[in-house]
Image (cartoon, rainbow, N blue to C red; front, side, top):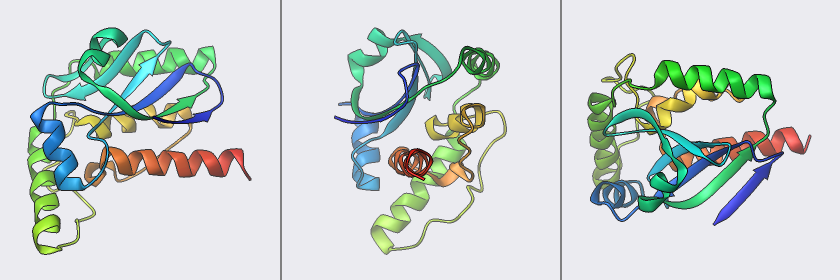
Length: 172
């Protein structure tokens, strides 16, 4: 497991895979080692969006079916942690963005099979619905790590973007 660290251990961004068919398909289509992103807070709870929508679950429950391939630890103040919990409470219960996922999957297949480049925007992106990578739009700005145009970003691409940004911050 690659455990790129930035500061303390309050928030850990988890990049995972599993033995579930959806994970295998995502890894095959993208050619990347991970299929999902989630956020571990206080080493107790995990926030993420899957087919059930945006929700929180206990860390142990999440890790029963997810294998952490990469993680990034981000130190946060108590005030920042409270803002993260507020954001999570606002986004929890929001539905999974199935329309955006299907368009993204279609574009990824066109890229894999025919070499077509991915578009910059997801034409079927729905407001107030999220697939796993899009949840960063709610949490990233609170951590002062803004990454734009997430609607056509894979979990592994998010990992690489975060790692690059945090290395630039820690190594000026």
